[in-house]
Amino acid sequence: MAVESPTAPATPERQPFRPGLEGVPATQSAICDIDGQQGLLTYRGYSVGDLVAQSSFLETAYLLIWGELPTSTELRAFEHEVQMHRRVSFRIRDMMKSFPSGGHPMDALQASAASLGLFYSRRALDNPEYIVGAVVRLLAKIPTMVAAFQLIRKGQDPIQPRDDLAYAANFLYMLTEREPDPLAARIFDTCLILHAEHSLNASTFSARVTASTLTDPYAVVASAVGTLAGPLHGGANEDVLAMLEEIGSLDQVEPWLEQAMAQKQKIMGFGHREYKVKDPRAVILQKLAEDLFDQFGHDPLYDLARKLEEVAAERLGPKGIYPNVDFYSGLVYRKLGIPEDLFTPIFAIARTAGWLAHWKEQLGANRIYRPSQIYTGAAGRDWMPLQAR
Ligand code: ACO
Image (tube, rainbow, N blue to C red):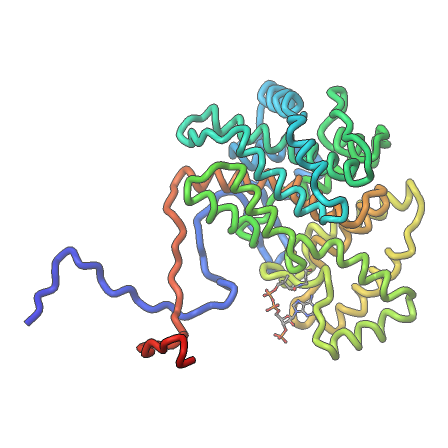
């Protein structure tokens, strides 16, 4: 009779397969909490509404990454560090000049974020100074790289960051070559806060899986950027405007929705795995859009969006499908004069804060991700020589 070794691992219990890992906890985290029934979102225990009203993006990034709100000295030092590292090497700018100008800015961002690892590749993950340096560099340089590609693809040279401008204002300046209106800069900063973190979404999961191999933080962010790019995730914000433009007029909203639903088409900017009510970020973004329209003029696409939300509430509301963060963000960015294919890179600028918070948390209690699978393929097949196939 075979005697089982006392050290032999017990046969793992077979877990039911949950497509998309729905409802499966894949980590423990103290960074962000979502109440999808009530429509509540908190970062480190602070409501996102309070942060939007009181904080700045960099202060929120500090909170997410280090776990506590900074003192005024800490915040000043952090802002100063980020400001000092905004420039990117001329070698990265030259590399970006060789990218095809028709390429998507998310692909350009993924490649340039990964290239930072060539310049700062030392993986001293147990050195706190290395961690701080990587956090600062990524927060500082990602916006510069997004703005640089925008100018490069228009055949222009990127412009240098301006030290007298705060984070959001400097990005808008590097993008448009104009100092932004203070209201526009403040609203943009608020958008960054709203997009900074959202628990274990696909790109953050991707970041944590990559982080768990103990690779460098630039690879972590680059893998997350690639994941965010898809239309079911961050890429939806650019599809929302295309959808509204396709609908075209108020009287077409209902027939368009009927047809889309008959064809089992997903309505972009609607639905969320976590929320069964309207995404609290969509509520705030809608208000920001209205503030912008009051100041800088109305956008008729907003009327279409509101009508679509109203009509969709009757059809999709009973299933818990309501506008998500992407539904109104595009209208805000459009009013700020930002090209549509930069909406997702802007999402990435903001979400870099969340990815870095998760990178740091993952390192604090790391175990490599290695889930199991349920094999559904063939078994016991006899080899067939090439000539016999
Ligand atoms: N329009 C119409 N029906 C929808 C939508 C939608 N936007 N979203 C979900 N549904 C329906 C599905 O058809 C399905 O119906 P069924 O049960 O009758 O077949 C049901 O709701 C569940 O949908 P799933 O796709 O299984 O939901 P899941 O949680 O996997 O997907 C997702 C969530 C990807 C966000 C989905 O709602 C979607 O594709 N939305 C459109 C794209 C989008 O806006 N993405 C941005 C999300 S926010 C972010 O990532 C930043």
